[in-house]
Amino acid sequence: MVNQKTRSLVLTAMFIALSAVGAAIKVPSPTGTVAFDSAPGYTAALLLGPSYGAATAALGHLFTSMFAGFPMTLPLHLLIAAEMAVFAAVYGVLKRFNLPLAAIAASFLNGIVAPASFIPFPNFGMGFFTAMLLPLLIGSVANVILSAIVYKAIVGLKHNMDIRQEH
Image (tube, rainbow, N blue to C red; front, top):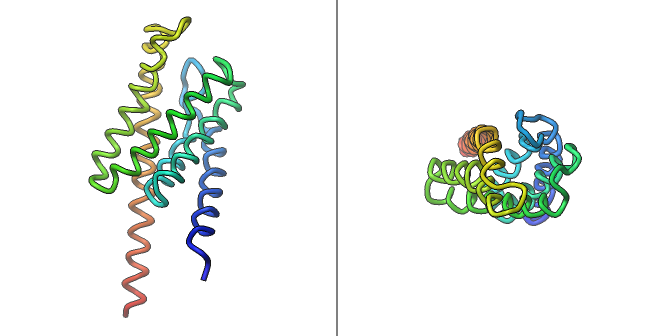
């Protein structure tokens, strides 16, 4: 039998690869950095745990910003990657209590709190927040919903397979 840690690392690598693919599927935005890169990170947080989801989500954002040419400079994208790691971890932790609540929290954090975190920065302010709010909120909700659907499908398949093995 495969070691659980090895299994988790292999699945994380798969989710990271899926993040790179998702990074190429863009949601129109002023920066070009809103994409489907975080759905695999959120899914990893639900299936494998908060730390695996955090690593996947952070790398997913870096793929997206790299594909867009790192608009706003690399250091700011490292900050966003750190935010994404926290948001995915929160999603994975809150799922233990209530998946819809976790989905709402992750959507709020990534769709509203993330762009608001740039208000204090010179050259960003309310203009950046206003420009990014709608595309980022739409992208966040879409990524979170996609992750919840995939999670439910995988858990349902696993449950069905377990039942078949019992009979």
